[in-house]
Length: 112
Length: 114
Image (cartoon, rainbow over all chains, first blue to last red):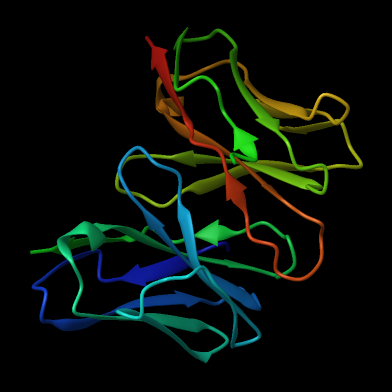
């Protein structure tokens, strides 16, 4: 089983809202990732968690706040987003190192 | 600086024929390469990978070839089917230690025509 689940599938929010994206995997993977993907572009890495600790933050604005409550769960808290933050947000997991990453279906976020 | 390049933004192939998607990389520290398939508004689906100790890996209709001296890899799909129509991303990582993130190419849109 190589399933990564993400909720919600779609999210529309105003610039003053606070919302959260959720990601879950039960493959025993120790590394989890958040990516952002705009149309016709490759996925762009935002954050990497390794053994529940933040190991990479690709200079993402503070209005995006990741959280890893346990080894199976990854959240992305959103606050005061801008319309240009509208994108497909992808979660992925892997065994760690440079191993294969498995992606979830994504959350389509629209910021009004 | 683009470390992983997919120079063909699109490719059209007749059903039943071979599809060849190409990828070049510049970072000699990359030692693991992957191909992902992506439909619109969905997450990328892992297809096949190859480590730098090999030059070929097969999985059903999909074969990936790696030419380390040329820093080039290719994905062959034989025979191509209409359901293969999607965007294909080449990705690379390495060295295989720490949490080296994947570096993606910009993708090639494959259209398989019935």
